[in-house]
Image (cartoon, rainbow, N blue to C red; front, side, top):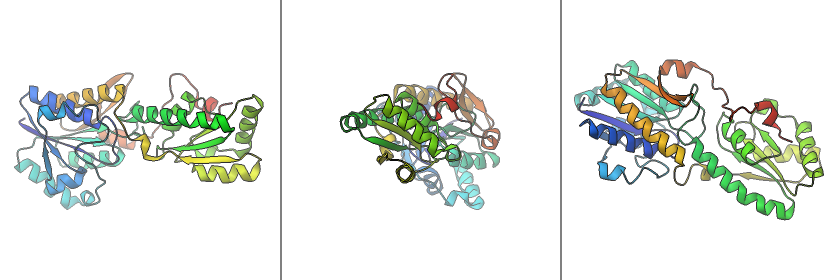
Length: 321
């Protein structure tokens, strides 16, 4: 093996650059060239490349986002485009590819593997929505960003006695809401729309107010409902005035956390080791504190289960009084 490619796809996630560093560092030790493809699968299709010298990747390990750029590619869904692209990779001397991204990126990697080209897919998404892995790259940084932002918000909320409903990212997964809500000691945590009960929520807010707490805090997963929807419902059924807030892309930003830097780099090293030792295609995940290789078909066909922090029970903390 003399040359491998690497790309980042889908939503950006802090820790992606740490993976790039890990891949290049491990590859250099094996005398393997690493070529970066820019802007996800579109860059792979158009052969838009970026050199990744070791001196450069050592400076990006902590940076959030991705220096390779990222995008969601509709063109790569075309089987003929995929076949032509992979044939060009083979003709150009590539022997493997590392893909970092979420479930859409995994599907692209899966399609390449089915064409007989070795790919390692790594879980890069703040949403923590990849099945069969305990934590995705970027998830821990997003949690830190939510906590830092909301810690600032509640100091003002306490001063005025405000009731804040804060909508956090996660797409269809409620992990960011659950974990950050517990850490922030939120009065209400909403992770799934079908489990929303306005009467129970109002009772939780009333109990918080009766306790003498100076503010109310509700954390809502974007896949459950919007903060505006929550405001409309609760204000129509109670006397509470709700301040809705969409936290937005600040959750993706900033420097990668300690966890994402370390795990990202190790993921990169293990991906190179897998390809260099003749691996034909897989994805990787964390199971019981260990990074393991997994069949990508098994992962994509599995259901995503909410990952609970430590031994907390989800139902006990969905509405935390």
